Image (cartoon, rainbow, N blue to C red; front, top):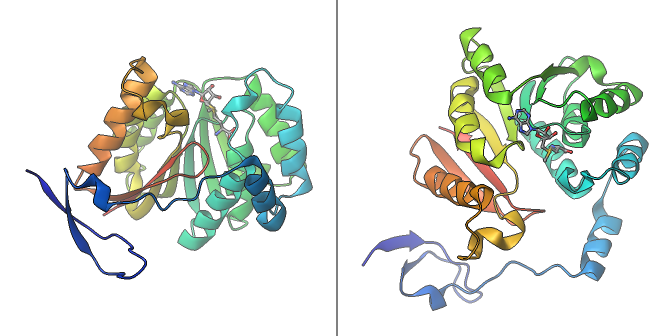
Length: 246
Ligand SMILES: C[S@@+](CC[C@H](N)C(=O)[O-])C[C@H]1O[C@@H](n2cnc3c(N)ncnc32)[C@H](O)[C@@H]1O
């Protein structure tokens, strides 16, 4: 039997307790379940968005692929992480209409830079328009092309250990390869954020065997066991995996 030393916050006993794989009942689910009413309250009580961010969401909502856009509370959280890290150099893989990039860039200092990678020249036109409107376009360097090729170029250019924060939100079957490249490009202590690791719950459904779901499961497990990083999965939005490069 495999043993894990897991710290469980028991209401009466906030100390680490020893649990085993067959003692799953010892861990009760403490994450709150969001209802629409509670989600709406949370946004009302805590969301701080600029008018350009709201306008970008409204514009994107009319597009067929709008489900790909990160939700606003995730954008706010990513902005907070950017500030917490004091990040000056960030990289994003998967831009779409630019909401996550805008949220990160708004949190950067004036001389900060975000390298934004996407293969789609059409939706990123919308991104450029809104970045300009927000007055932060000089902070964002958009590179159009297959992300793995752009990442390889950055490695070839010698950009090792030069990024403070990286966000992965493109092709789910390529996450592991983005991660390997980003491990070279991130500085020690740098933060990697991977989106969609809970994939609308499909990752927990054993009957779901499509290639995106299978890839996301394998990715999360492989990062858990990777000694180069410390990780945490947060049930925010569609599931965010945070990893710090050690
Ligand atoms: C989920 S969306 C990104 C959403 C974005 N982060 C936001 O906040 O709205 C995924 C994006 O990844 C891009 N993408 C998918 N596969 C890619 C690849 N192999 N190389 C570069 N970009 C890719 C798509 O064009 C799409 O714009």
